[in-house]
Image (cartoon, rainbow, N blue to C red):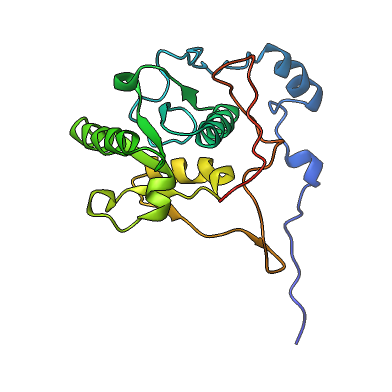
Length: 211
């Protein structure tokens, strides 16, 4: 069967391009006339005034009031706990009503101190303050009715006060009352190199025994 012949001749592909189409050099020069659109940016700067609210659950921004009763050893523990909290970013305040959390550090040496401890817990609850308890009283009697539902940090665990405060601010109840050990051997109290805020800058309390 004879093959069909095509009488129509196709133009060269370069001839198909219209004479009115822009040349590459024309397109390149037109780019210079393009004005980029500038995206508007929010220039508002955050300051302390419009920062997180005082009731925010973000740890490390709250104000803490620390109250210590009792012996010199207990006062030393209170200074260590204050130093650690301040080093983490918490603000240690002398105004109890302005604080978000009360850290009550008790002692069983004298009955009046324990009575003040109980009264302070009651007052904190009435004012809807977060509460962390420390010292000998909750360590020796953690199951007392007036201690139920409250966070407690034991006398051997004061180097973990930041953890306990963080969880308490989040609404959790934490209790660290265990004895620290190293290879089965009991350890003493807080390390001497922990941050510390002295009540009296001229007096340094150094613990030589725990019990």
